[in-house]
Length: 292
Image (cartoon, rainbow, N blue to C red; front, side, top):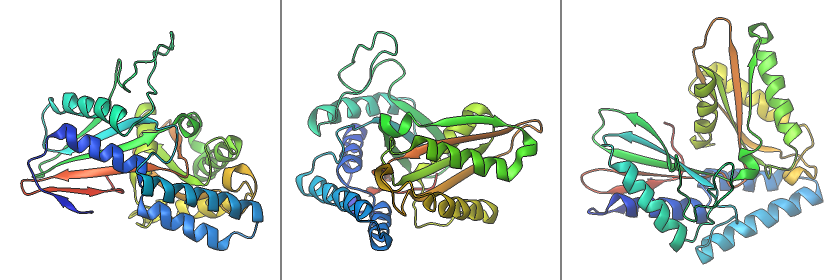
């Protein structure tokens, strides 16, 4: 966790701080992964792409400006103790952040394409609730731009396809996407559950720090196998060739129906932008990677 900000501070201000942090500072674990990739790349083109990414990150941090023009749609998770009024506070924070950071207004009506101008609109902001008995309120945000979000894939595999079927589906999804989701990025995978839960797990997996191992040894091995397989594909940074197609693979799993094998892939681009704030009675701690 980062520096503590003393209370009182209204929730909408916390949300603005979260959105500014996520937009202008790359999570440390993602930054280290990019540095490592630059060290093992032998392709001049790949090295140049990674160099341009890291220079962009440095300038965004220095100038306190968004690191990508597509500031995405913010997706929130609220964990701990809270009441329903927090949704209104988050909405106020999103509208304020859109004006002051600034963030590009991305939300439109799906049919008329009318832009709401404030990253809100019907069904926005998207907030997932995780009630617990903890003595804190934790707000986490993930910014998803269209380049990566449009590459989301979901399938109901035949259970007989098993582990190898999952590996093939994930591999095909990433390689078919090519350079469109701005690789190298993070691959979030949902495995099991129902259709809606599976897709939600894939996105939630992108919140997990790259430098923390999956506590499930079976999933950890799958993550490692996919990491090697995808980086051996030659797709490389921005799809232009190289040894770094992904910075990490994260899998979340839930039980599923005996006749089903749901699998979902949600890709995070090289700028997998996330931030979290834990609000307690004594202060607020900000971080950029969390396992929910």
